Image 1 (cartoon, one colour):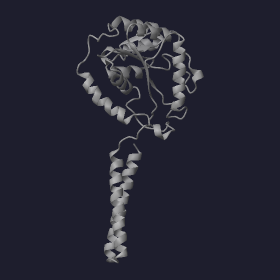
Image 2 (cartoon, helix red, strand yellow):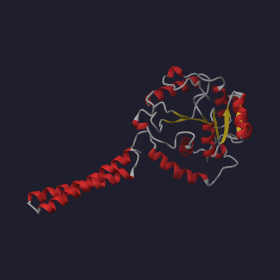
Image 3 (cartoon, helix red, strand yellow):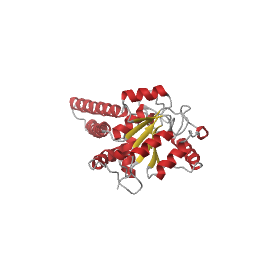
Image 4 (tube, helix red, strand yellow):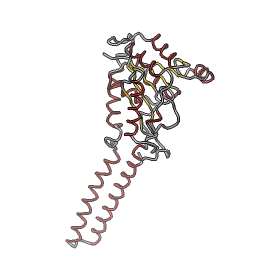
Length: 284
């Protein structure tokens, strides 16, 4: 039985956004954040944070520091009798701005891609069609929409609200967290222990295939990405070493000079091919 959830953006939605938060002391709840989470939890929905954290790739903080930041966030929410069921984050960033090479890559987890929401749906048995995505940017809305959720943009600025409404980039626009919760409760009939009325029975099997792959390749540095180029390079490297040994024994046996030269050239060609494959894999 799947349950509904609300996927929250973090910075600028639940807490203040001074830029890249790199210290727990920078965590400050926005007005109404704890109350919003309490109301949704009381209605039987899970509260899940899905946040881009490219500051890790930029070298502004590391993952242990991020964990301390999230611990401070949980403490602040607990003071208001609220809690978060799970936190998902993407530390990756593609391009030159990523100063930490281990995190310099494109990722399906990074919003506006829906990877974090898909991963949460698999791990927590969530019904995405009955769930919501709430954030302060169009990227949050796109991630939610691509995952199959309904979306709410929290925009206090009237111009931003009207622009979003005109472009139909989100399902709803709210002026505050309280208004966003009102929208969710008005349009959601799911309570804890009850399955949503409009569950898509074909979605889970598809998600499981996608997310099993995501979990293998995106485990935040626990394992390197699988690379066909790296595998091919290793195979050719073994062949090159074997050819070098064969050529060496030919020298010992005083084989024909022309044959020895051909063997050495063959070894050199194999080594160059292996280096090429390794270079291709390192660019990924």
